[in-house]
Image 1 (cartoon, rainbow, N blue to C red):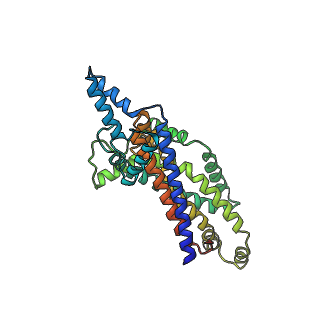
Image 2: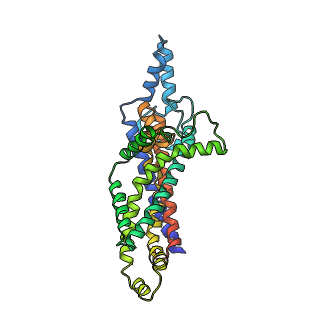
Image 3: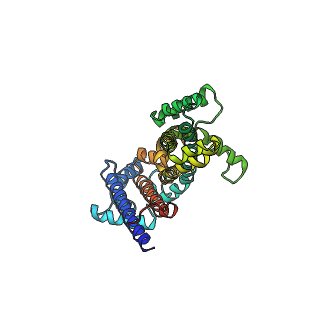
Length: 334
């Protein structure tokens, strides 16, 4: 037990290091950006006519305090960490005076739902087809499926997304191509709204599944190809055990543990694939929110989304790290 506590302490130290490094980089990149959120706000407010210079200066100082850009870079840095700890990133410039965390809270369920579902589906399909391809290596149909999956893997996400958009949005218009749900529907727990969310999420999810399935397919096929040559598998086949039982009980089960670890890490990094897909399909998630904040020069929103993503991913990986030794006793804690 003491060894496990030491292991957890080490992983927690890594978690703190990753969070501090990631948040610090996000802070520095945002502050060295040529866009000044205060001056941008002032230009918008003063573009409607003449304003008293004293009122402008008072307003400018108030905005600097509001956005946390008053004082030296060091003082701004520690002020920013105070806001991170409180979960307060101030108001959004592009949606003033709505707080940044409120905007993130609205977009977060869309991203988590879409990417978690797409990751699990691609994991299941990729592992199933990879296991079949590794065991039944002489099947021509499986070889053709494998070639198609591997051909899709190196294609950029936006190319597949745009292709699906053109095919199912214009050439064969059977699916919606923009948004997260039908606009005139109220957000409620009803079948009408849920079915609309599912319908609007098919193309973004299919894009992620087609892109992500290749990696799982290749790794699972390699694992199974190595396992089928092990003695216990050969003896089972020579002993007359049915091929389906050998495949499911002896081969696939033993190849799944590394893939379960990979799934856990992929779920921890669900934010990574959000940006491009959500931008292509105008999906109302974290990725689209980030791009909108960058284009609008929304200093607080960009910092809030980036910081939240860094902490969420680091926390997910930390939980996976401390849980994995409990799942796999072969992991050394020393």
